[in-house]
Image (cartoon, rainbow, N blue to C red; front, side):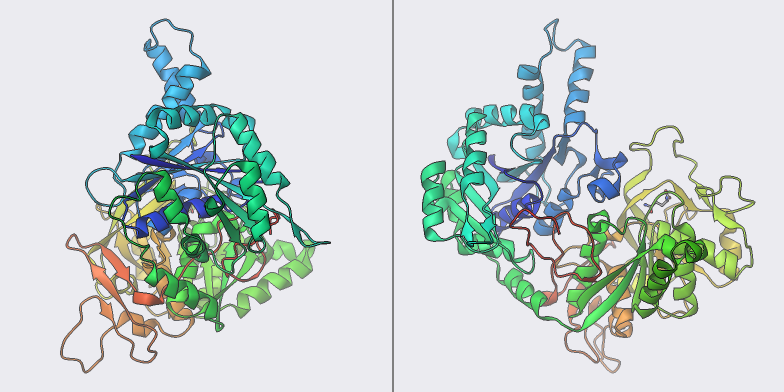
Length: 626
Ligand code: GLN
């Protein structure tokens, strides 16, 4: 196993995760099999109990792991499926060490950070690196390890020490340390300053780690004399200094790395230059990246959420919207609508905010209500679902967004004014959404219905089934405690709502649709976690297609007069750009490939949201959070 360690210096928020994923991607494009580990030095066992407002979204894996959102970058860029153990935290390491101590595994020794914690970290890395994540047998060739935080953080010290020991043990030809740093440009003179990077590299070396490649974030490409200076002061060969300047779309990053021959430098360090490897195969990627920058016809999506102050709170949803929009050749414009601003109560407290929220909602081509917890903004989400339903605006409700759509239907169509979820009103007389029997009310961490679960389509010819390529069932990821009350389903269905997807018992509602609406779909699962640049998520694709008036092309993918029915492929009837192919696997699940037409995702950099287009900027080369 070869290891590529990616550390970060100077400031946080440099896009280290995107850079590390891009490194993985170019190595994969060279023909190597790649896996990834993200180290988060915080004390939480996992990201499950962390507020999306503070830390960005909680990313959910197939195995139910609730992990750092950077794992989403790896899954999307490398098209792999990681496990919960691919995210290491201080909490997990200490938990394991303490368990061993209680079992008596340390045979009476004093348990210490060195060697017990550092050994635990190394064993964890070496064990997890061997888990195949790309659907093939046997371990990958290279494991990219991203160390979260910035060099010098107190929390990361045991990890730095452990990684130093690991590099020593596996030997220099098996370990490549890439340090992502910042070269700020002083605006007055426009000069690229190397001092912060020098200091950061010095700090790293002082801790026993020697970087062999520097990836320097800056607003523009580094001048040759700046590279020379860095090379001299940081003891890194000039050809190993890569500059990652600001680009309009994060999909350019692997291309920047390739153009500067970063793959050659890495392969040389890892003693792989002699083996048979090819130039990175990135043709499709390049086409997509260039296409992504070109589209200017907008599709406006109103995101009605609770955490609209930080776009990272809904990162995977944004990326899934972006994949779908670019596949359909549109520029994604997201209008953030704070759900509570839509509520009547806000009219008195904040009239301007209330008017703005409603104007944004009304000018959108589609409405998306993402997942969420707690009752803040729930009434606003219900109003958004009502607006979309009554005005025939395409609607996608995810998890809580599905539950609120069901509550809205019960209230407006069944006339049950106090219909509610027991999450928001535990004593409601009309519980249309209830706590799932298997849940825990006392422990919050890891006790939800989590991870990949199967949904069976129950209604042939419904929109969602067609979107999933007429599959019989689909596996999507879940994260919820509440569900639609099965006792209320018959009443809802008699009134016109159709539950088109259910779990294997037929008792748990997974997909809801309104057949006489252009596109009104609610899903209990989170399809955003399975969206990939080259495989946009079907519900998102449906939403965007409906928003731009092309849903029919997607749902009826063969020419009416054609004799040969192209199972699972869709061919445009009107617009030539709607070409692509949905693949139905023998097991009945779905995957898709949309030739050169798909596209990427917004940035992996933390930032406040601003209404407007999602271009996927990679542009805080001055260390500024946008
Ligand atoms: N709060 C709801 C539940 O627990 C929805 C969760 C979500 O949207 N992820 O069921």
